[in-house]
Each structure stands twice: as structure tokens, then as C-alpha cells.
Image (tube, rainbow, N blue to C red; front, side, top):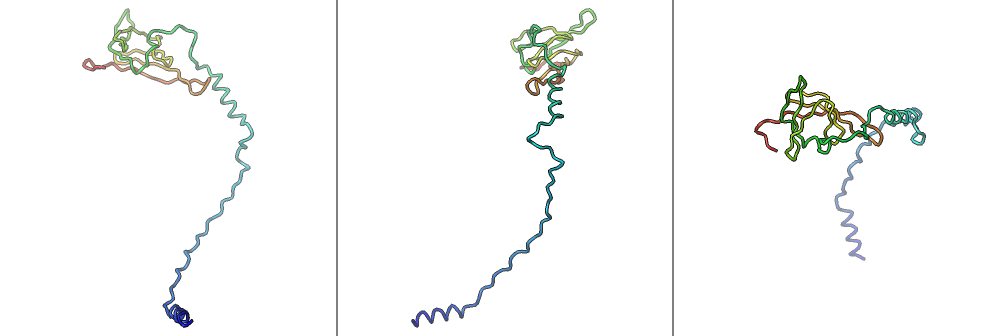
Length: 155
């Protein structure tokens, strides 16, 4: 019993430790959520639905029934413009395909897999408008071009 009393006396004689004070609690400004002005996610938004219907009813869509031209079997980035020819006052473009064949094209011809239609031919540039799909049934136009390849360039 004396050992126990000596130990308790020793513990009581030790210097008491101090506990650090708790950090100051920062007050957070409350946020009031007001859902009255927000749309209900369980009700179909008629305005958004009309927009989708307008996209589907848009006049921009490819002519799938027209016969495909030979250059429509190539990706546009695999074709190279290699020159132009002036025939009877109109400028024709010369386009080289990946198989080495050179094709003559003029305004109104199609090329590339995205329904690209040639809208302008300049001495160093062929400008196209492609029709690409945004979502099922919705189409949009995108401008594209083929620049004249340099003489020493190899692909």
C-alpha cells in the first residue's frame, strides 16, 4: 500500500500540463436556398423542347440520296491541293488523293466524308462547307479548306 501512496504522491507532485485553448470558431454566413425561381427537373421544359424540335426541323441536312463523288471516300485531311487549272474562264482545283490520283474539282463538287461541298476555288486555296452532325437528327455547317501544298512537300 505504501508503494501505491508513494506513486500517487509522485504523480500529484508533477508539474501540471496545460491544455491549449480551442481555436476560435469562425461564424459562417448562412445561405438561404430559394428554389422558387429554378426550374423543376421533373417537368419537361417546353422552351428547350422547342429548341430541339427546331434543330431537327432545320433546313441544314446532307442530301443522302445524291450519288457520292469519288473524293467523298477520302477523309479531308488526307487530300492535298496540288494546283489549279483555268479552263474556259473558270478555275478548277487539282486535288491529289492518297492513292496518287490527281482529280479535277470545281465549285459545287463534293469531297471528304463530312458531306463537304466546294464553295470557292482560289489559286492557293479550296474552300468547302461541311455538314456535320451535332446530335441525332441535328446538323450544322462547318467551314473547311485545302491549302496549296508546297512543291517540295512529301506525304
